[in-house]
Length: 341
Ligand code: CP3
Image 1 (tube, helix red, strand yellow):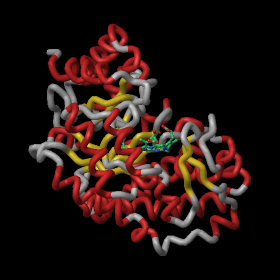
Image 2 (spheres, helix red, strand yellow):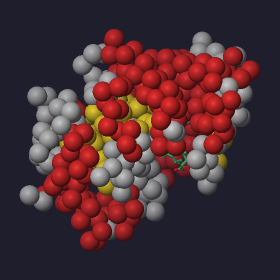
Image 3 (cartoon, rainbow, N blue to C red):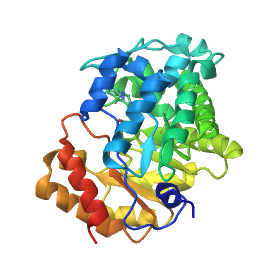
Image 4 (spheres, rainbow, N blue to C red):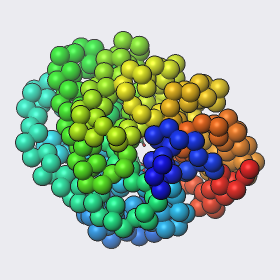
């Protein structure tokens, strides 16, 4: 046992009331985030400015006292560090120049860690400034999810451009995925070196692939990353979050080697319990219940806590909190998770 509850649970301890944090807990639902974001200029300026990135990471910890804190950055700083251009436009999300086979062949990881030095500095400062009992999480995107944005150049409803590219040009796509897996694993290693207690791999678009492609582009690359991180940091928990993976959740922990499983809100709680028999689970409140509040929120929280309280369990949302969520609802959720018997 350590003095950090989230870390203990990720390693397999049962703790009650469960530790709690929220995906995207630093974000636009907080007025203090919006103020710092304005001061920073662009979203990327915020990601690469350790003073301000530390500040926005700490904001939800100060306000709510979450048990875990997640580094403020974005999954798309990885392609940016590989020399791809990246911008964020208000209301449009990320925009990149779409990459093709010749672009993939030219990717250069030479300046990768220099480009990300500010992120490592942010992690280092966070571990010093956070309360001692707060678990610090590092993160990155899974190769598949990062690749979907690199191929399309923007978000799409079903990632058809990347799916089609992978089917038509599997060798070029494999080269992209392999490179992303290796640099992303090294990126996580550096975050752990800098002080992260555990890391989460976000595979937000795992839910759009058929079985063959899921195995090839989601499972295998994450397994490759886990092996590479473990070779350096064998004790550090790794949370896998294959959002939307449905029936593929069943073998995901065994096949990838991740320590803990992040569950999206569509995973039934009976399934969640079976997954919990093999190790920690994290999740999985529908973020819309948090927007709605009231009975919709209470019944959602109660069902999850009741189902998962007897094993290693970190309370979280099933995906990120959205800007339209009332702060009072976050407070109500915390109170219910922490004070309901
Ligand atoms: O959770 C946290 O508080 C840490 C910070 C974090 C951000 N992005 C900050 C962010 C994390 C962990 C991410 C991960 C991320 N980024 C994912 C995986 C998780 C998920 O949500 O599925 C993905 C797919 C991205 C790519 C991305 N970044 C998109 C699609 C968008 C636009 C959507 C939006 O909400 O505007 C972003 C922008 C982004 N990343 C914002 C924040 C706080 C909002 C931009 C802003 O503040 O102007």
